[in-house]
Length: 426
Image 1 (cartoon, rainbow, N blue to C red):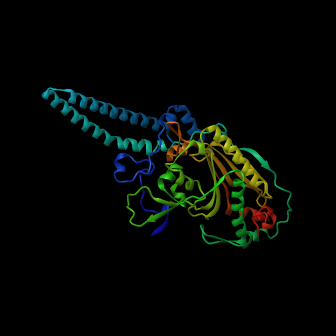
Image 2: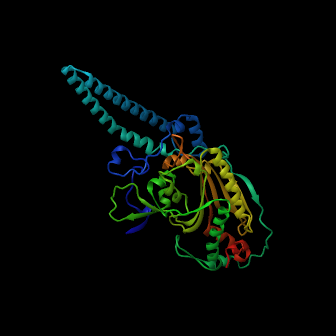
Image 3: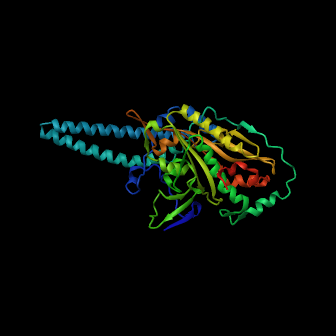
């Protein structure tokens, strides 16, 4: 039996990471995967790291991370030195014909074994402090196209010249949306019809551009939430029967129309390079803690190189435009600045629709480039000869039905004003 809980209401708290488990914790907790830890790439150019953290206005302390890395490397070097000493001692013991010498060498081997065991036990806390609490919190590298301070409008469709008389528009929203608490909503009339048709039409727009319709799981484990650098407090937690109190890899409800749903499929997956680039689109629910669930359309792309991924990103933006051009509203595409990016994102554009009722722009969609950041964290690889490489990921929310429909109704737009929906038939 499963029970839903909101994460902030749970009494227990964990200091351990579900994404990275040290050896001592792996004895009690099941380690689903081992993320690829590219220390040299992230920390080799320290000035680049500091610039990244500064532009994002992240609270990370780079100096502390550098000190922890030096300590971690020192401990790892000492472990390797002892391992080499043990190997050399074993060879000398096998080659020696003197019993007294063998006895002395065996004593040294026992001491080396004990030293290594003690050092390993000490290294767990050092690795936990450095990797789980700091290294995995380092944000993705910023893309060259990401503005440093202010967002940049890259495309704009002006709002159509609509009648200024909006009498009765407010009642459209009130009549067709019945809200029961922060997370429960019931739609009727045109709102319900749009909720059915808009996601279908959106998916069809991408399928026409060779995207494959996909289906994702509604539930994910904590390690995937950490891999995507999503706050667990934003999701509902599912309490499982007979769940140990010290379990760190918990179950969360996210919905299949989300990035987390895609990651649940691609974790620890190895693909042939011939299947790349991947172009996938899905329609499904997305659940947020203390927010109304929504039907959403999400796209996911994977490419071999950054150049291919950037081309796929630009191609996807054009398909976004093709879909939103069909709506009788103005909109703009905005290149998001570094401080507004989520930690895992390298680059993002937002689609903002013009709300004539409030004379403001409202975000309804986004498209993100993650480079190979997510692939390394979930062990998603492709084979390049004998080498294993990590695909570059492009993904985004194409539409969220609740917010989109509310905006359309607020501006007096009904099903009769959206003739492209009738392409599905009556």
